[in-house]
Each structure stands twice: as structure tokens, then as C-alpha cells.
Length: 128
Image 1 (spheres, rainbow, N blue to C red):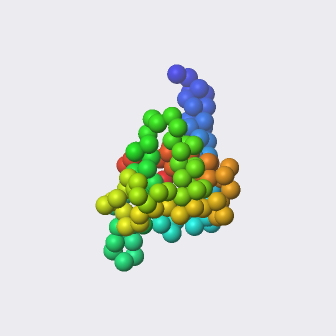
Image 2 (cartoon, helix red, strand yellow):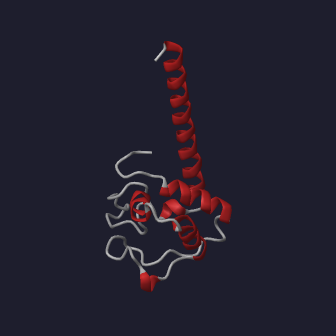
């Protein structure tokens, strides 16, 4: 590979990395403003201030659970907007909350979908 080609590849990689970091900041700001960070963490294993399990699942755990499911974005966007059923909790015993409340008043559907796509793109073991 020639030096100019290598420099071009490096520049492109750094640009993509910077764009990803900007997107992380944007998505975290959106999540914070919508109140998501009150119940959720990004990293698994983090405890709440009282030492209890978090109210909602860590987003890397959500990403892992739904990895490869074609309808995951739509399904999770609906859950964010309408809430979840406490009688069908698939996070029981892993989190202290039983259900997600409806959030349609806190976040627009388009923003919820963007956030869900970002969450589903998180990889286990990698820091944002």
C-alpha cells in the first residue's frame, strides 16, 4: 500500500471514529433529556446509588439479548413509547423494576427509534 493510500485510510478511520463518538454524545444527551438514564445504565453490573440492581436493564445487555432479531428496533421502540407488561417481564430477577412505564410524553417516536438503533448497536465489552 502506498503512503498516500495508507494516510487516506487512516484519515477515514479517524473520521468515522470521531463521528461515532459524536453520535454517542448525542444519544446520551437525548437519553438523559428523555429521562432514560434514571432507570438504565449502559454497562451491565452497575448498581444504583442505594446499592440495588438498576431499575431497568443495562443497554449492552439489551443489545446482546436482541442481537440479530429483525424486528428488534420496531419492538423496542414500541416498548419505549407504550411501556412494557409487568406480568411478562423478561428481566425479572436481573433488575429491580418490573415494567417500563410509557414514555411517549417524554420522547418523540423518531427520537426513540434513533436511540433504540444506537442501543442495539452497542457491543458487549466495549466502552462508549
